[in-house]
Amino acid sequence: MTHAILRNLTQKNPCMVRGEGIYLYDSDGKRYIDGASGSALACNIGHGVKEVAAVMATQAEELAYNPFHCSHSQAYEDMAERLIRWAPKGFVRVFSVSSGSEAVENAVKFGRQYHVARGVPSKYLVISRWQSYHGNTLGALACSGATGRRRRHTPMIRDAIHIPPAFCYRCAFEKTYPACDLKCARALENAILQEGPENVSAFIAEPVVGAALGGVPAPPGYFQKIREICDRYDVLFIADEVMCGLGRTGANFAMDHWSVVPDIIAIGKGMGSGYFPMAACLVADGIMHTMQSRGAGFEGVHTCCGHLLGSRVTSVILDYMEKNDLVRNSRQQGELLLQGIEHLKASRPSVGDVRGLGLMCGVEFVKDQATREPFPSELKVAEHVMDACMDRGLIVYPGHGTIDGASGDHLLIGPPLVITSKQIGDLLAILQDAVAVVEKEIRI
Ligand SMILES: Cc1ncc(COP(=O)(O)O)c(C=O)c1O
Image (tube, rainbow, N blue to C red; front, top):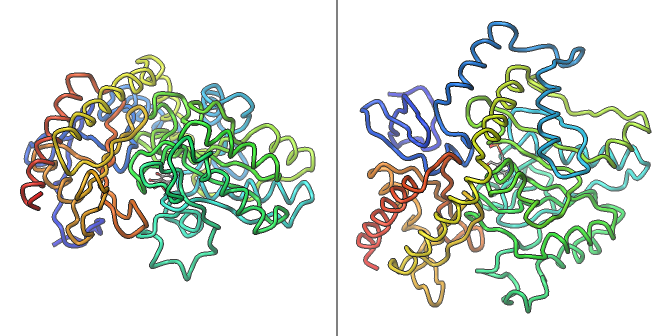
């Protein structure tokens, strides 16, 4: 009998009691490789880091929390300074909140309030993409294109406009890169013109799609084209780097891979690495300058904005990442992980596509590698693979609706950025075994 609500209302999950680096231990003493860095791809620095625990204890004794409506803290200032140092040139201010969903909603609000402040109040619409995930609060869900997570709530949300994702393995336009001339990016221009540029506030996208597609980076040139279109129609570009930011993809920010600078970046997950719920909007100079010069404040405060203890935790995490060169490690180990999963594709017929950037990798399962036909949804292949991995001591993150919101199975694999080459080998061995067992069960 439990009084606590878990994600699955009927299943009994193992109870985790201890963590160290990439490993978690349950109450029976069983060890798991945390191949998903928590839920999902959050615990960038790994579990049980003593430096973080020590700072949390001393800071909590001294002062954990200050009233945000009338006071400031050096901890918040220091964290903001570090994040701006990590960010692309042009970013000047940080607004911290407690979850990725809040970061996304506040990014959208920053966009809207900027347009109002500069005297263009007609701009309010947000354009996003199908098969995206921007969070689970109603506002963030409105931007999300993950059908399974949205459907029950769609009557309650004020929906964003959705365009097809940049997903070459299953191109919505049935084209091939680069001959496609980035039709998926040009779809944004079409949507803006349909809605009227005077009504469109912002476009939001994950540079590497996480939960909804399983580690899919946009192709080269995509975000350059997006930036061009946004500039042409006076539309802000919000990069949702809640999952892919802060070193996860082997660069400080995933957008660095395209050398494109967005107007607002939403971050979360790795910012608190599971030690503290931290997320933020990073806002570029142009927006801040306009809002300040027009005397506009920002309406969007929450109880735990600029959290003092949380800010200290994020600063320690960023320092730890710098000291241990974890962005580089993510890049190097990510290459190994991707190569390993590519090998898996060669030996396991159910592995249809392998993708990723840094330590944010994905596997898509198919019934037929040649035709890319998916498994019937009711087989729940990704969940079976996750269960088989769990049995063998590996945690991965399953996803569904990869193709059209309803069918398609994938796994997201993203261990903590402290993982070693030897541990990548251990993870791959378990994954290989688990996929083979599930293939046998479903007789492929
Ligand atoms: C890209 C992206 N944006 C936003 C969110 C929402 O973050 P949170 O669950 O912290 O609200 C997530 C969570 O998975 C995410 O992956």
